[in-house]
Length: 103
Image: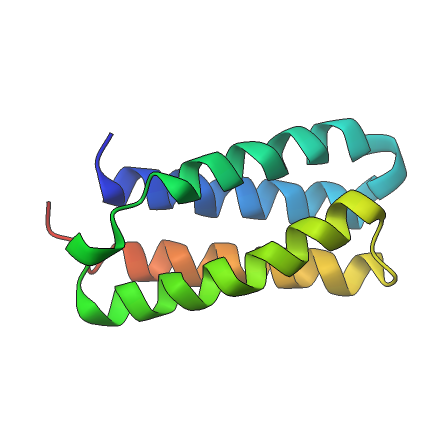
């Protein structure tokens, strides 16, 4: 799978997780956990050096914040709606930025 499609998969996962968390975090926790782990796996497969410079920087920023978001999601966010919003915001950012890739 190429970087563009993998980033779009990550973005879709982030939006799904955010939606599930906002709707019913406790009830969807097993599914959220599964998608958090899948997203981490997909993120490790991205070849940052091959990304356009602006997307590479954005993706590095995402990876840094995702470490904390994932940990918070695994432990149960203090403010579920705020956490869900951050997940969806990153999903939207990555969807938009993936358009910079011309593979």
